[in-house]
Amino acid sequence: MLRFLIPTAKEMVEKKPEKIKKIYSNNTRKIIDEMSQKDLNELLSIYHFKKEETALKEQRRWRDITSDTSFSYKALDLYNGLMYRTLKTDLSNDAKKYLNQTTFITTALYGIIPISESIKPHRLDFNTSLSINNQSLKKLWKKDYDNFIESHEQETIISLLSSEFETVFSTINRQKLIKVRFYEQDHSGKWKQHSTISKKGRGYFLKAAAMEECQTIKDLKALSFEGYHFKESNNQNELIYIRKV
Image (cartoon, rainbow, N blue to C red; front, top):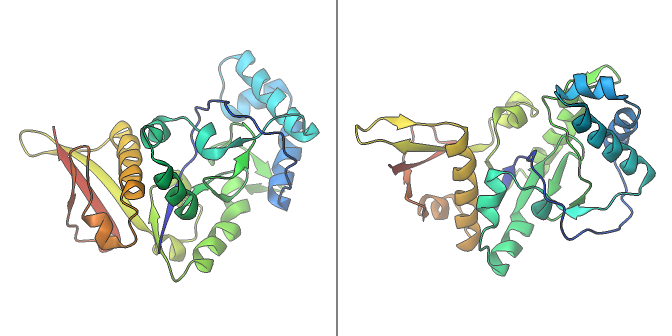
């Protein structure tokens, strides 16, 4: 069985609200308690925000989470970055069911969660300058992240993560991930890769895997999507997809 790991997104769209009572893990509760106590200047520093109104919005979010007055949203619906927009466009119901069964989001607030999990809108990632009991967010979550890998030892875990998220795992568990890379090839044959190519590629790839209900690495290698085709790699823990432009 395949399992996919994907990152969060800074961009969010708050539609289809749910009013449910969340039960938080110890790590999540520690983060919420810490963030809800930050004043505007601290939030400006932590997030590197330039505008006070942006920090004020985030302060309200954290305090609403603490008081349990904010709405929750399905994670797939809430996140709306480039990868998510690419993934969600014209997604069939069967493909959504596939994602619900196979796909998990790596977060800095909740740990690793199913894509269908209901979460509160917030801004937090592993580059945020925050310390919890003298631990960075990466150190705080490392055990939980490693436990996820170890509890899925019999499954193939496909990483669509950037290094920011992959480095939360210990080195030994990071080496168990199958990483996916996306490249564009120009008329001269030169490969290029940048964040936009990677974000769109992740969305296209995961959508194609869901639409085809892929079950094995062989199924993934057979995928063709948005001009991308599989290219053999010297690294057995890497899947490469290239398209000509």
